[in-house]
Length: 339
Image 1 (cartoon, rainbow, N blue to C red):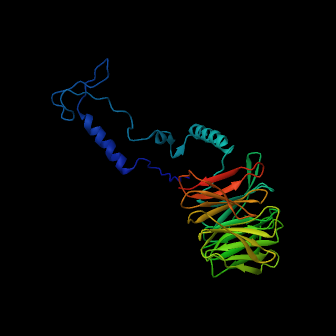
Image 2 (image 1 turned 30 degrees about the horizontal axis):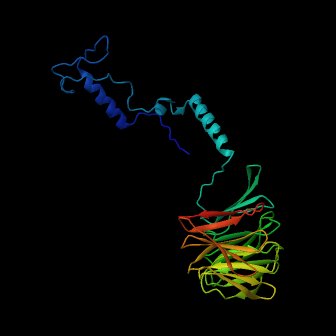
Image 3 (image 1 turned 90 degrees about the vertical axis):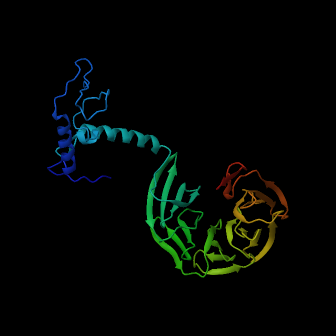
């Protein structure tokens, strides 16, 4: 956006001095060649070096093309319409595949059942978008905190969105249709690093920087269970598909653990063949294969949930793996890397 201040004396003082100087330079008569229009060198011409010719000066050489089209402080309409039509054409071309956000994105979550895209920004604002047939609709944008979002999770119906903010130890649940808080608690003694809803929407699981895994009732929002088996930061947490009682967690302590949320016990511990720190987690649609990505070495480890045995190690990556996901249609694992 440009803000212009229009004045009557458009020619400024500095510009007037330059014009006076230009008038002083050709004070002597200048003889021009009739064919070339260039100045004929004179012996007493002290402004030019010997043997050189120069182009005759143009009118208003210090004004830009834009300034030349300003008449009494007004921008010519034809020029403005030309620029507007060009910008509109470019915007229409880009709007087919992109939308524009003027802040740094920290986290994004897509809810497949409702076609909702939730984007969390660095300044504590989140945007909610409806994505359908390669078109998007901006549903709402709210600033609900002063710090960046650490984790976002959506309940199965797509109506409630859970936010975790590590910096101020805050857990929030937002009902976006009524634009109201279902739950908003701040001042925990731990940083919330990851969240996930159970598939029936009755349980919210959270992982903390202290290595604790907590289970919350989605109606009363009381914490009814805490697991303390991890000894370092819990980096990822997920319920297994089609199951509300099996919770998988990954941690910087080098373990991936499976918890039974009905019997409140840790029934499986999965480790890599070398010491490592796990940064992300993925579960195949059947719920039988567990995959975790590591920070160093840059590998993906796959285990059987039933036996806990290491099935496969996927390598050849050149940077830490930040997130990964299985395709909901075909059993294909997608990996995303951050260098």
